[in-house]
Image (cartoon, rainbow over all chains, first blue to last red; front, side, top):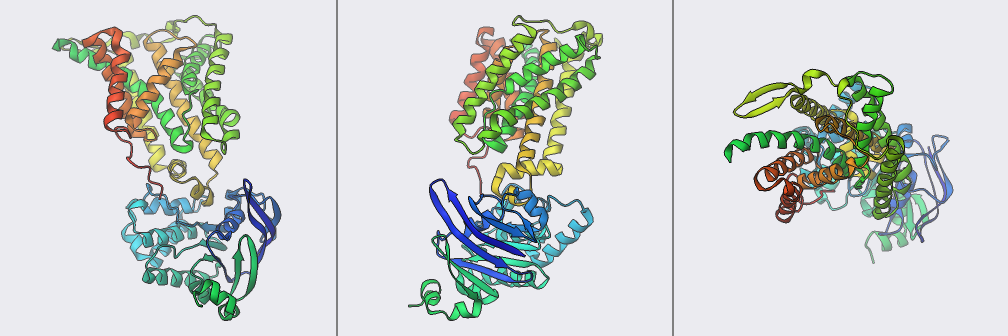
Length: 235
Length: 298
């Protein structure tokens, strides 16, 4: 479904990605784990067309999206929930959701999806008239995920959905990610919380200083001594 | 003393709503790309000249000429963005500010080449005669139909603008873009299109302001955009740059302060009083009357 082939991305003189390659098949949950600054977010931003890779190729559903503008990538069915949630603080919850479905014209379908998202996160229904900026961190994360779902993505990229959230909220978010995947949406999950991510993912990639240093099934990665030591906090 | 108050208030309001009309153009563009579009005053000036040209050279009736000038200025605004600002989107902000000043000088000189540098009267023969008649008079205040027309037009445009910003898809996208550009792009919002739309909207409103002023004072000249632009920019800052209701309020406060300054202090000090009010507000409320204290980018 998604094929990233040896992309190199630069920020000025900083060589952030040094030939990252990964593939995702339809229906999977794939996770990308790694330390801070390993290039996880840059990989997602390169896929979404926000930062352009200098070399390499990205293919989604058989189409070359390497230099495609973001709005066309979204239209193809690839949506991202960015790191730090990036909800629109001055827009109401409902307006945030509408912006998620910006490219859609089917009002009835949008209304149905909105109520589907409210069923997934009942707290958002209660707060639908509130400004996004007044929500708690966990609620903002729910809103960010709901907003991305409004685009009806076939592939959902999630960047650190657990960041800064209480363990009980994280559990809820991960349960929802699982549920989203069960309904047929493919997921690429970036996480620092490797334990949590590998528990729900089918496969994983380990990124370090802009390179993929390891890949495999989640079970294999969870058992790997190097992964356990570096990313699962064991010594 | 007091009998002067009402007439001066009416004068101030007339001027104020026009400042407000220009100020929303500054504040909207600032909201989406954090740029002070210094060429906005020139778009206002072009509005006045194009309207006159459409009446004299094309033979359009007054009201149609206003609409045509609005359309042309919307295109000028989008053109400004395309040639002067869009190539510098990722450059340091100062670079775009310099090109903004450059475009301002260019447009001013272009107008001098086309229409000459001397002030022209507005084509009074094209202006419907009733506009210059007194519509209302009460306790020493004489309101002309033109003043009522100015209030009606600006009110309608402000309401229309608020409707677009708060109720439509593109308006919500403008607000989304102002709050987080990356997130907006990730939602599939065509960022450059929304920015161009913002320029078009602000420029069309600026054009109307230019026309109303040139009819009100029966005069138009290529440098008219400079002072009006500076005043409207001051109004936008006074109201809280980036805030559309702030720009409206700022324009009215500035216009009233100016008229009262002219009436009660000296007409020589009208600009001085206006700027003094602005400075006072900025000292005590640096974010402006309706501006947010902190830019909340969650």
